[in-house]
Length: 206
Image 1 (tube, rainbow, N blue to C red):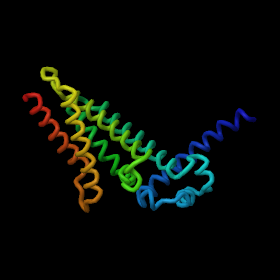
Image 2 (spheres, rainbow, N blue to C red):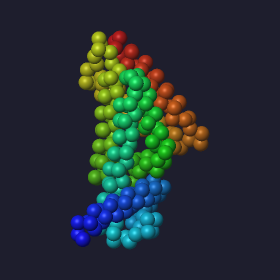
Image 3 (cartoon, rainbow, N blue to C red):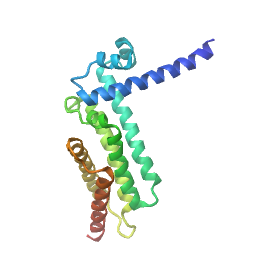
Image 4 (cartoon, one colour):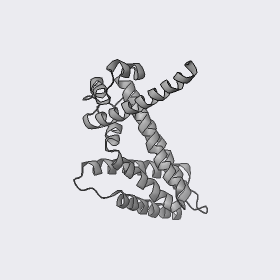
């Protein structure tokens, strides 16, 4: 009996954790870290508060689990889009488009990632920095793909471009969430692609 019930319990726990994290992401995104309680999340999912503590240990632990889940989904989405592109230039557009579409499809995600009440210091700030560092490395890979072989950029140049683009995407994401009529992801991605493409051509001739 143990061999048949244990896998079911594992599946039940995995499904329950997914429900908890989905609810927590929504609530953290809508109310911020300070405005969210474990009671809120438990009531949303229909489970007991002690069960959430059993799974995550604390509200900090739950928040970190949300960040880890968002990081995985966001980076996988962008990386898959980049790898599926027909060529290096299209990869720029595909990566930017995937980023902004993801944020549009998960409106609370960006709020969780930039919750200033939680992310100024401590493990949550470190986790968010890891998300940013992984995204910057992905951008750096996209940049390397687009630098012609006859004028290879050095590591400093790659990082300057990647850091700049990362900062631009963050500011654009914040602007779009606050705008009453934001431009569509396609327009933002195409403008960023054109800007970076022109910059890389300037870089190669310098």
